Length: 252
Image (tube, rainbow, N blue to C red; front, side, top):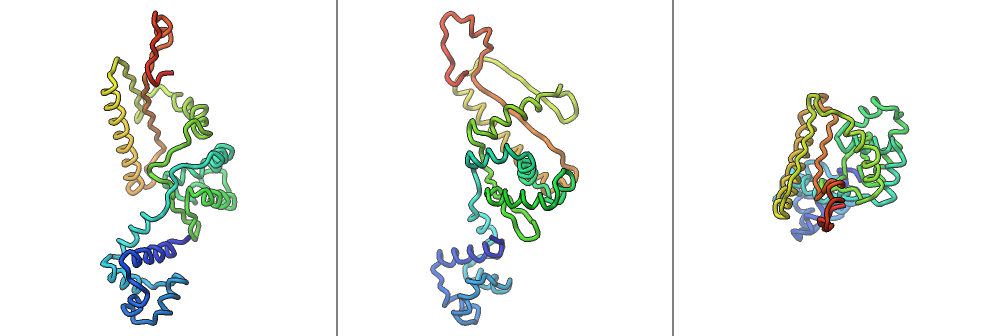
C-alpha cells in the first residue's frame, strides 16, 4: 500500500471518529457527494483538498501523517518459519539488517555482491514478511516495531549464539571505541531487579543514539554492537564444592 493510500485511509478513519459524513465533506469542498465518494474510492485527493478536509477535523496535515504512521501495524515478532528463512539466506539477512539500520538500498547493492535484480527480489521477500513496505522507486519504509524481539530459543537466537556471539568476543577490546567490563559479587533480588531496570534504560538510550545518528551521521556512521549480559551465576568449580547444593533461581 502506498503512502498516499494510507493517508486517505487515515483520513476516512478520522472522519468516522468525528462523525463527519461525505455530504459534509462535499459541502466543504464545494463538489458533489458522488465526487467525494470517487475521491475516496480512487484515493486521488489533491494536496489542497486534503488540507481543507483536515481543517474540518481541526487537524494540520502533519497531524494526519503522524496519525497514519501510528495506524501502521508494525511487526513485533516473526514466525518460526520466517526466522528460518532469514537464517537460511545470508543475503536476505544482510538486506534485512542494513535496511533496519537505515542504509539505502542502492548503497547496499553497491557495497555487497547483490545485483539490482536480486536485491529487488530480496526487497519483495522482506515486504511479504512485513519487515519493510516496498514503495514505488524501490523506496523502503521499515515496519519493524521498536519493541521487536526474536523468538526465544528460535533460529535467529541460535544463529547469534553459534556465530555472532563468538565473533564478537574475538577482540582484546583495547582499541579506540571498544570496551569490555566485568563485575561480579553477591547481590540481593531487589538490587538485581534495579540493575536489570538500569540495563534496559541504557539499551533504550543506546537505541536513541542510533536514531540520532540516522539523521545526523551521513557517511560517518560505522557498524557498532553492544552486548550486556547479566544472570545469577556461579563458577562451576565453586558450585561443585558446595556441601549442600542450593541452586540459585534462574541459574543454569
